[in-house]
Image 1 (tube, helix red, strand yellow):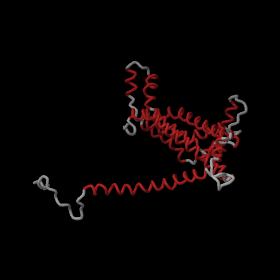
Image 2 (cartoon, helix red, strand yellow; image 1 turned 120 degrees about the vertical axis):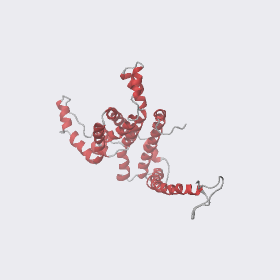
Image 3 (tube, helix red, strand yellow; image 1 turned 60 degrees about the vertical axis):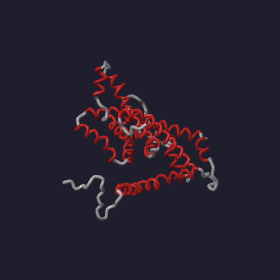
Image 4 (cartoon, helix red, strand yellow; image 1 turned 90 degrees about the horizontal axis):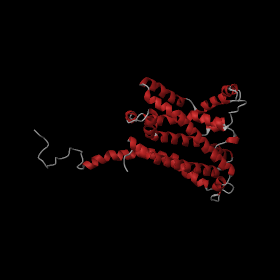
Length: 308
């Protein structure tokens, strides 16, 4: 026998219940809002406030802190030395990104071909560097790249003459590449593992040779992974500090070193804030361009939202 009662007749709510079903549905939503306030407060305190404070200090004059203006930005953008450091920073970040892409793409692609046992081993090899301190890894490169180290000795044995690596931009790029490579491989593998390999067979059945099918079909579908990995590596390389300090030299310093020197050594918080803010703005612009460029390919793969 149906206990629901006559059609159109609403039963009385249970004791302690609410007449409004919407009120019951709103309660979990209110709880989620309270839960979301915790990370929002964290972001506001530990990210938004420092950025606002950095912006405020960047308009404080170095010699006359009571005054305000664009003198710090004029000093930074009007100095040929600082612009050369900015150019060197972007050049190094581009080199690191390119090398990581060249090394990481075949590795991630191979991970999609092997069996699960080898895939676990390869993934462990990618994640293992995260268990070691960045400083320790950079000190290892100091031993390898020093004048009497194994790398320099091997290059001299090959007949390249006297080679100096430590204290150069080359050493900085090598050290940053080793640290950034996992940040390229992981996004690439995440996207490559979603690509249907039968598309390659379909292209070959239509007359395309394997190389053309790979370049014309597979690579365009992997653009979201390329863009994601390249964006992460490039942005991290722009602000990386330990490798330039330990493997580079003051003559080949990058922008991160100059910011730390202005703030901690010279106590020029306004100049350091102006340099950091310019770097932040350029970084956000690159993020926007990367996301916009990868949007059509993400839609083709069905990654992310489908609106629009």
